[in-house]
Image (cartoon, rainbow, N blue to C red):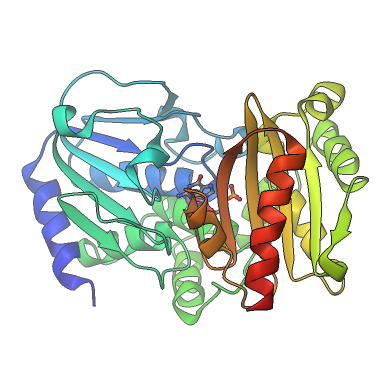
Length: 323
Ligand code: 5GP
Ligand code: MN
């Protein structure tokens, strides 16, 4: 289905010599997986001149991935690149001004799987049906080579596993599972990889989870669960923002809850995460507030004090649930 754009991307990669790779702010497992798999793929193509940088670097937990050591944390990159590869970022704002695409990149290639994805590149490989963006990188690799290397496989499997929340979420589809099977055949040890990512929590992280969960509230007749991570909680526990991942799922798991909302306190407002348990399309709310994401997992930022922010979000959720 995406054969033409995949071939066009491969042609551009073959003809180019310098590459810039980035992903979205607050990168997750899929972001880092895409970058490391793409770096390994570029190396196999004989392309060694690449820079990987994200505004927020890489979460500690993914630093074991081969080539993750190359992921820099940078507010801005300098220099010119033949190609900028924008991975798992649905719109230009999501990369946090790390590069001036017009001035610094000869060609922009966007590869993404979000419902809210905008085709802002010269080449856009967008696939909402793909469970993870890492699988799209795999589709490039398999068009060129018979098999992924073990290291490529480890990255891609990590992308699929984290983006499907251990093959549990609604995006877990036949393609994701077929790809996962092939990756295991290419050398991935699923249990070892799962342990590396999910069984290495720090005490600080678990304490933060406790703080956040003790504040869970039910709203709208029990259909909505809200929880919060404040700067004070981070300070008291010694945890950092990247340790919030997964916290919201506990709120969503409450019986009767259809939508969970996490408010993460920031300097001048709140970063909001939404998760739905049924078919409720929370991306609609995120887009309304200038954010985006997927049908059942989306996010956005809202300035202002908590009471105001909470009121605005809950009123949108109420409208959506009543539709
Ligand atoms: P999370 O709640 O884990 O931060 O994000 C859930 C999903 O929504 C992810 O796919 C993420 O990329 C997307 N997302 C989160 N925040 C934003 C945002 O501010 N803008 C856009 N476009 N997408 C977001
Ligand atoms: Mn992502």
